[in-house]
Length: 466
Image 1 (cartoon, rainbow, N blue to C red):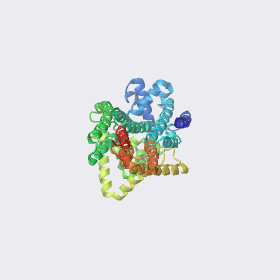
Image 2 (image 1 turned 90 degrees about the horizontal axis):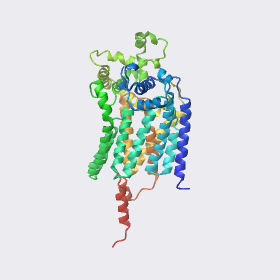
Image 3 (image 1 turned 135 degrees about the vertical axis):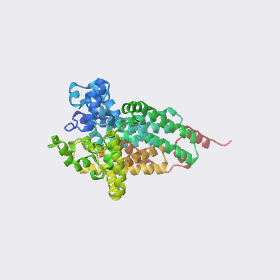
Image 4 (image 1 turned 30 degrees about the horizontal axis):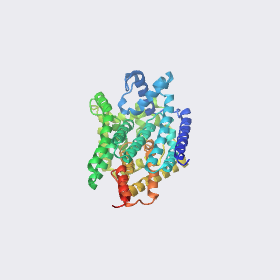
């Protein structure tokens, strides 16, 4: 029974997760469809029906603004279970059920990740927290990329943890890199992550002057396979645009909004600041609420300042000017804006498009959860120097930093929260366990473990002298 208990707990947690997400899938939040949701739907229908990515039938001005991961999943779902009605409004009902399955998979991977790091009880705690995490469940009811991004990222970390534990199986490092590549094709804001992780691990090995070749090989595989997965889409997108496009063109708009101090670094703030001019330019918006005005029309005001440049390049130029101007002329206000964006990303929770109420208990839980998980992650890493915890820290730190510069929203923490929770729970177990003996601690430090060598070393140490 004791051997079966972890698997029973795993089954119960996953059943709970699917039940909560299935309830959301059966009654999704479809009273308001954001521009992103509609665009993902258009791309999915175009892929499935026409074999195009935002072709003429969609009337999309910049289909490469959106990464291909979620549209590909939604296209498969639409092809298998879609209806004619989905083609009319691009709100694909079956997508919500695919989101429910994906998020159940996220719960499974969180359980396995914490189990691999510490044991089944850590897995059960982390899995239960993620299974009942309301913002992630709510995201099932929206046609967005965050649930898939969360699943792919935590799966990449789970495979990487297994690779570290089974150190000589290099194919696991390659598989982790491939999963990081798929994550980037879904969440472009994580583009540098596998390369930062690989660089950090190799740098630690060089500083320590230990296992340099082995570490370079292992984490080099992570970086290379991530690049190989990205290559076909990069070639396609670059050929379509006529210049290098790593994944999407969306970075220019996000950078502009994030550096536009009068708008507070938010899309809504930018539209509010420009509301009078937007309504003057577009009389058809007279009775429309401000948050429903397309952000593209607000961005067009600034793109028109550079008629000789394509829209994306014009916004990049405006964003660079924003960064230079506001950081030098109003540095205090600019730093405050960056801090407010970091708080918005982590200390607010995702409520769904068009939902403006705030639940005080959920807000308190979000803040407590982030602080406790973050503290556990840091404490566990300082205690054991486990490379997987280091990889999660690098990811969290980079994502936070980039979103203090580009646009920041609470929903951007959704892809990161499952990995943060798994790492945080495992970290607290590490921190609260007895300090390992010197021989044990040596095997748990960065840049990697070598379980087989550790086991043979232990056998040698306990063998009687001859």
